[in-house]
Amino acid sequence: MEKGEEEKPTKAGSRLCCICNQRRAALKRPKTLQQICRECFYEVFEEEIHQVIVENQLFKPGERVAIGASGGKDSTVLAYVLSELNRRHNYGLDLFLLSVDEGITGYRDDSLETVKRNEIQYGLPLKIVSYKDLYGWTMDEIVKMIGLKNNCTFCGVFRRQALDRGAALLKVDKVATGHNADDIAETVLLNILRGDIARLSRCTSIVTGEDGPIPRCKPFKYTYEKEIVMYAYFKRLDYFSTECIYSPNAYRGFAREFIKDLERIRPRAILDIIQSGEDFRISTFTKMPEQGTCERCGYISSQKWCKACVLLEGLNRGLPKLGIGRSRGPNNDRKNGTKETNGAKSIESKQCGTLDF
Image 1 (cartoon, rainbow, N blue to C red):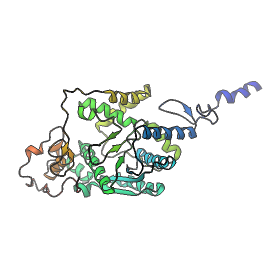
Image 2 (tube, one colour; image 1 turned 180 degrees about the vertical axis):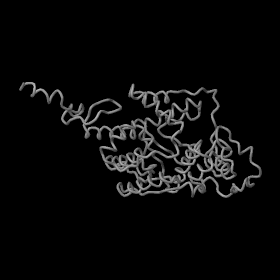
Image 3 (cartoon, one colour; image 1 turned 135 degrees about the horizontal axis):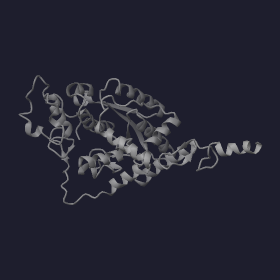
Image 4 (tube, one colour; image 1 turned 90 degrees about the horizontal axis):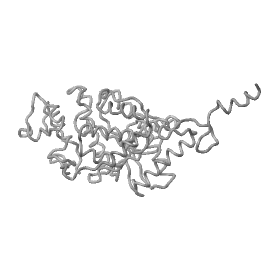
């Protein structure tokens, strides 16, 4: 009996960390299924991100880098980790927080309060740009006009440009976003389902927009979402966790659930999908869009008007579905460009942003 009682702690007690073999394991890593302690988890989590930054030469000493900050787990952990690595490894970066206010009452206004606290907690200057200032519309107003279907199309297009315009105001050299491995795997799958060859060829790139006004990089390209959540939880970071109230049925959500199912069966599946996306070869006979600039606002575009200007024209003319889908209709549908429809605002009232590129 005494012998059994002596053996019980060894048999039933928590395992030792498989890395240091000293402390008790506190978690199982989703990516590798290793049982490790918190301290080793922090170390390997941060070191993997550091290696991604170094191996891909994401930053250069003296660069001004804006961190896309939404107040969510990904951007909050990115801001914290980049600040730590910048000090620890002497990257020599000037870091800023850049947030976009889409104008979603009860969601974005609350998350921006989190970002404002992060500004103080991490000592990083914060710049906020809003849809209302840039485009003359808030997402609340857009959803009121078009409903919940296709609203994510408007928001995604406007947010991408808003980040660039905010980065231009900050005069930064690069924007770092919190896109993680799960996000990229979802995007690969979505582009396959949509047959979007142009985006499929670049969605796994760790640096994008090098031919545009300001490049973007993804330090979390190989970082699992579950590990980001664990890191934020154990570090007790201050982040906002509510999902957008306007995206309960977003198409991406179905891809996300599929990826999660695959991860439960085989954790390596996320990295394998990213690897597959990287290894795709686009046929030389496939015609790719040629990069140009929007005739209206000067933003990068493969059409005469950029997607944001197309969507804005539809909104301002009271025809919100004009720019939805693959059609770039307004270039053909436009009549003199200033006519008002059903009392809608003149399309000259607000262009796509207010900055020159």
